[in-house]
Image 1 (tube, rainbow, N blue to C red):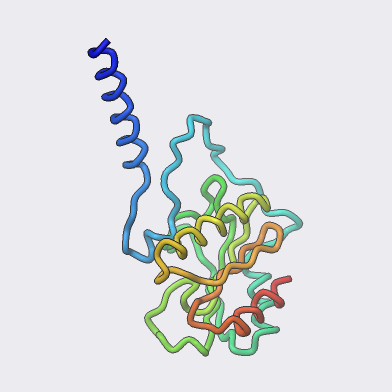
Image 2 (spheres, rainbow, N blue to C red):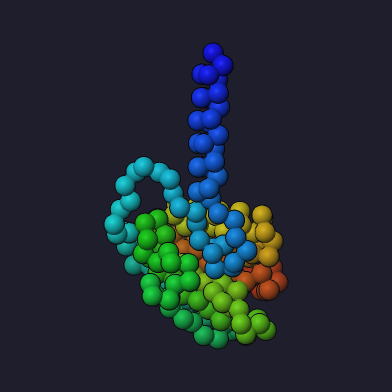
Length: 175
């Protein structure tokens, strides 16, 4: 009886340790925006489906830039320069564009911290999951907090350096 109990406790500890080691906590902003590796046994699809209704981040960013007068430049993210290494991966964004806002004084800011980032996903569920993931990071480590607005398959991530009213300009322009 004692040996069986010890065996079960050991197996439980090993399983718990393995589960804990699959999620990583980091203080790096780039790494903090990447989701932990999935432990699901389901096979990943090799190619993400195209976004709904021909949406792409560049077109949405251009629309936002017209409405938000402090949005000065846009930069399309490629698989080669994606700091999160998520572009085109299963259940991740299919296109992304960074928008620079002139109200952000930190010239070293990257990604959404420069103003905003538009991420387009194949499904609304994937966009919501990404927003929930980023929100959880912001709650756990407020230094990474930001404004996130989901519109169907589109996630608009806005820098926390902007006020709530300024962030709302991005939300309104994206809808």
